[in-house]
Structures are given as C-alpha cells and as structure tokens.
Image (cartoon, rainbow, N blue to C red):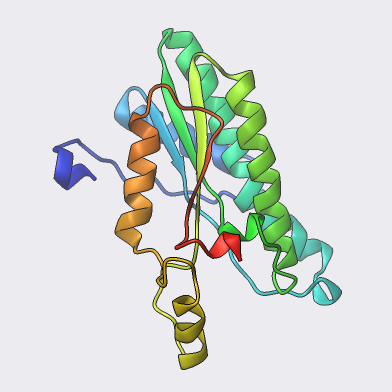
Length: 193
C-alpha cells in the first residue's frame, strides 16, 4: 500500500510465539514510527493436523501466533490510542473456515475461531477509540492440482480471491470509519457451501 499512497513504511520482525514477542514487536514499531494509528494482524501459521493427531504443542503454537499475538497487539494499540486521545483501527485476518469447519486443520481452526470471537468483543470493548474488524479470506494461492481447480470453479463466484482483492478488503475496513465488529468474507462465496 505504501507505493500506492506514498506512506512511509518500516520493517519490524519478531517472534510472535514468544512470551513477550507481541509486545516487543509493537514497541519496536512504535519506536520507529513514533505513533501507530492502524494495525493489520496478518501473521499466521497454518498446518493440516487432524484432531486425532494434534498435540498440546500443536494447539499452543497455533494459539500463540494466530490468536494470542493479535489479541495482545490490539490491546497494546488500544492503550496507545487512549494515551494519545486518538482514534484508530485494527483488522484481523481470519479464514473462511470459521464458517465451515475443516476437520483436517483443527488447531488452526480453533485459533481462528478464538480470534473471530475476540474481534467482536474487542470492537465493543475498545469503542469508540478503536474500531476492530476482520477479513476472512478463502485460499488465495493457485490450486496445485486439477481437483482443487475444479473445486474452486464450484464456488458461487466460480473463482478464488486474489491477494489484491483481500488487500482491497483490508483497506476498505481501515478506511470505513463507521464500521466496527464486522467480519468480511473474501472467498468467492466458499463460506456459503
């Protein structure tokens, strides 16, 4: 987005699965930028793990990166905005699977369902200072095999979303000042099946 808008950007890296990782990432970004008005929680892990094979470590790792880190980052942003008496927005990246559970990726699904619930609770808790919304994309990478390509053709809109379409949805929610607590599916209608 920075090339389109001329905005300055900074690179911040860290281990979101570490105990103090989310706070360190936020503090590093704040030190570089001076202030933060918006947050897009798009870091995520995905692993196909059927429930019968999932371990406590699998659940913990998915939970820490996919749910806990965005929650802590959003909480940190809310506090930062309160101190500045400013308004801002957080957008969480979910997955269309929240509407149609996938038994082949249970630890992942559980973490995304938790982030969905948090999105709605945080939208209410942090209003009016912070708007909190989410985008629930479908698969955006091209299908690797013919069966997957045929499945995408069966979606109501007969196609998977592009990365650009998901980014457009995020941008919309960042700019939609009268919108909070919304989950926007960008999946070609896959969640309807």
